[in-house]
Length: 493
Image 1 (cartoon, rainbow, N blue to C red):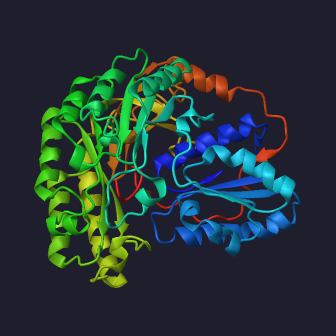
Image 2: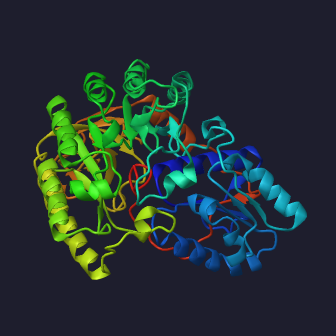
């Protein structure tokens, strides 16, 4: 599986893996050549097309050398390009869209039997994806989709055209899925939606999202609840109250700003202005003083002046975001912004982008340094620290979602007392150093709480090796390094 884009795509890939394993496929070993390669694509950025076709080009000789190998392309770019993919890359076997991911096993079999490409793009959702089998990538944390699609009409965003109108799940179905995940060992869930806090609009309950957060607080064994991404238009006081009053809802908020200029926000068709956004930030901080707030920002939207850009810098200084996903405006054919006057030269956009990144790095670092000396409880994570092995560290997430790399040895150099932590366990550490994008706790683990999630991770990690069979995975073909994705579903969140 090769996944691009947002958390919604990551979760869809878990479902695609579950579907294929349910149909008898086996995940490919990392050092093997897969029999089936699946690209789950994103269409938010302008270079998405080049990345896909570049990877497909790399795969052509691999497929030529392995008769019977199949390539499938799904997701937002497949929904957009449809038959164009097979025209440009005729060695692709299956193209499927965002509304029919459940069709993948059937389409692969049909392509195999008929020996011709199968292209199936539905215009509306056939079945809510959460009813499909899912191969969860984590034993201790899980994505839970509460809605799909988006009713907004942001002028820069192509996602609503590809994901469709918002469709909401019933609260009982969501809570039942969360309880089942907790029973399997998960201690953290992240509620997903293209516009997560608009949840309930389909069945007419404006407070449905805050009610859902409070209901999550009543699930025994569920220790951490997160959600992404809300839209400032729908971010109401009842949601802030629910966050502050529900102990297992974490003090973390990702809320896309996009621009600090009220004039540009109007051109973007974002239904809030600078004052409204900063008012939400103030209300969140009043209710949860330790909350970490992150955001998305677009630089170089058509017509952006230096004065508009200064307004964005003003909001960044006032809001003091813990982090920001920053993007240079990406023209997407079919969106209103693509044909707007005032498209900016690349050099201007790049220079502003660098100034924004420098300011945000300075703020992030200062906010992180303020946490030195503080004691924090971490949910131990797997694979989040690239240098952990070399430095005898592990990594975990604080309640506010900050990443903390911590030493597993006691201050004297020996092992920490008791059994060592596992991914899914909770450890208490003291912060000793800070960088713009992470914290360090090198004074040793002060306490370890072994959890059912850690037990679940250990049970999964200790399973017998899988028997070779029909393989599902991605051969090593020198793919480009990953680039940051919008944290909440799309640039339009």
